[in-house]
View 1 (cartoon, rainbow, N blue to C red):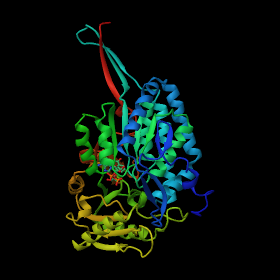
View 2 (view 1 turned 180 degrees about the vertical axis):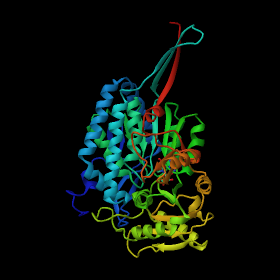
View 3 (view 1 turned 120 degrees about the vertical axis):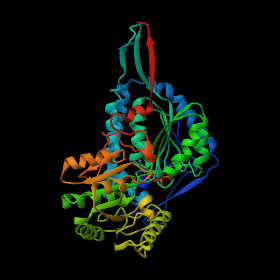
View 4 (view 1 turned 90 degrees about the horizontal axis):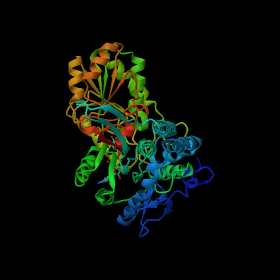
Length: 490
Ligand code: NAD
C-alpha cells in the first residue's frame, strides 16, 4: 500500500471524521490539544486526534442527555432499521476499514478483515434484538394483583474500549446500547482512535441522530471518565480492557453506584488431551494463539499438552509458528504484524526472558528483529514452569507457552489456578470427556475442538477477575436495560 496516496489511504479518506464527535458535530478539543496516532509498522505518525478536556466531557454528557428522550421514544423498528443500515455501510466500506485498523493497530490485514466482519455483525444482530425486548406478566401468587415486568433503556452510557479490536469492541457496546434505546459516549483507546471516529461517521451516515453516539479521545482518561461518572445523568459504564483498569473504574463507579459491565483480561488455558485429533488441535491452537498476533483477551496463554503427545505436538506447533510471515499488517502476505507499541514489545520480551531464566526451553523465535517497527517474532517455549510470570499474566503477544501434564485432574487444577476466567480451549476426540472437563473449568467461555469462541450470537464474558456481565447473544441487550416491576391491581 502506498501510504502517501490519499486515494488508497483510508487515514485520508476518513479525514472528515477526525474531531471530537459531540452532538453530531466534529470539532477540536477545547484548548486545541492533540494526540499523535502511531503506525506500529513504521513508528511514524499517522494522524493527530483531539485531546478532550473535562469541558469536552461535560459537553458530551449534555449532548447525550439532549438526545436521550427522543432516542428512547424512537420506535424499536426504526432503531432496528438504522442499526441494520450501520451494518450495511460497514460492510460496504469493509476493505477501507480493515486497512485503517491494520494501519493504526498493526494487525495483519486478514485479521483486520475478520474483525470488520465480526464488528459489523454486532449491528446486524442488535438490529434483530431491538424488536425482541420482552417483558413478563403474571398473577401474584396471593391473587391480589398482576406482576408486570417491563424493560426500559438504562440511560446515558459511557463506553470505554481497548486498542486490540478497535472496531468490534466498540460495536459490541454501541449495537446493544442503541438497540435498547440508550445514548452513548464512546472513549476509544488513544492507540487506535481513527477506527472509532470512522465508525461514528458511518453511523451518522446511516441515520443515527445527533447526540445518540458521541466519541471523544483523551490523554487523561482517569479525570475525564471520573467527571462523566460523577454526573447523575450517566447511568451505565461498559468497559473492555485490562483487569487493573477495570478495578480502578469499579471503585470510581461505586461513588455514584453506576451499573457496570466489565470485559477484562484473560489467561486462557488450552488443554490438549492425548486422544485429540492432532490436526484439529494444531489448527485450533494456531488460531487461538495467533489471531491478532496473540493480542486478544481470548488468546491461548498456557498450552497444557498431555505427555504421550507432547513432543509431537511441540514439534508441529514450532514448525507452524516458525513459518509465519512477519511484516507490516497491510502487506498482503503478512500473517503476524507488529505489536501495538514499544511498551508491548518490551513486556513480551521480559516475559520470555523470565521464562527462560526459570528453565523454559526456546524452540523458535525469542529474538527481536533488527528493524523499524514494534515487532516481536512468533515464539515457542517448551516446559514452561508454573512459576514463570507468563503463566500468571497475559502474554498478549505471539508467544506459545507449552506445559506438560499427565492426568485430567492435574490439567483442570492447573487450568483453574489463576485469578482470570475468560475463555478456555479443550481438544479431545471424546466429547463426553470434553464436556465433563468443560463443566469443571472456571471460565465464562469454552471452545471444544476449535480455536475460536467469539460470536455475536453468543454471550461473551468472563468469571472471576475476567469480568462482570455478558456481551452479545440474547443477554447483551439486557446490560443496557433496567428492569421495572409494576404491581398492578388489575
Ligand atoms: P487498558 O485497560 O490499558 O485500556 C483500556 C481502555 O481504558 C483504553 O481506552 C484506555 O485509554 C482506558 N483507560 C486506561 N486507564 C483508564 C482510567 N484510569 N480510567 C478510564 N479509562 C482508562 O487495556 P488495553 O491495553 O487497551 O487492552 C488490552 C486489555 O484489554 C487486555 O487486558 C485484554 O485482555 C483486555 N480485553 C478484554 C476483552 C474482553 O472482552 N474481556 C476484549 C479485548 C481486550
